[in-house]
Length: 183
Image (cartoon, rainbow, N blue to C red; front, side, top):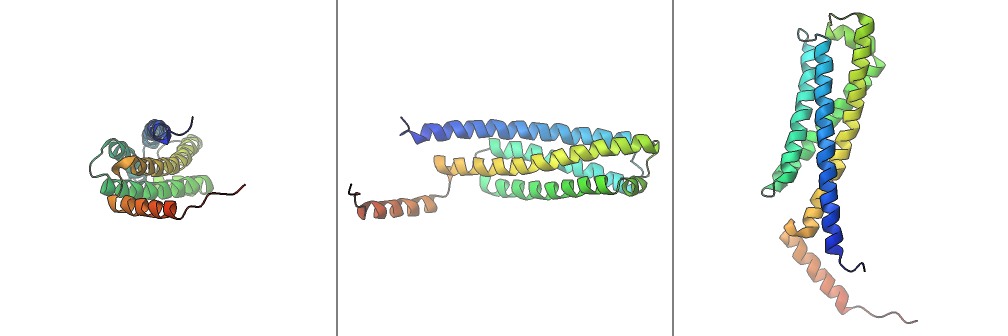
């Protein structure tokens, strides 16, 4: 009848965990697709192309690290913070690359030193830019879901003990000073 909030919280936790993993898998697919699109431009000789591929490798590493962090139960505090920082940084860089690709396509393509025809290279680069936009949005979804998962873990009992004991004392004080409403 709604009094058992623990069951609802557990169901929400599992649902959020599944969505988190699904979004991370989509993120893995989008980043690896972006790597293959970048390699199809034959960018290996350029330094800019190397950093573009490295950004997507770091994105893949962050997604794998996020899946491992959520699945692990011990030591989640430090790894959670590292996951959040790496996700924010990769999201910022993905957003910057996305804006750079769509605003300065010709200049960006010139810095990449591609051997592909310019019309084809622009189309491939814009596809990669669209994937960068998708990755940018998915990174922020991952951040939000990771926050909710950390919140659910705290509510279910694996959070900070000192904070829980202080909240329990506060709840007992509120009960002592409680007065019924008069109708």
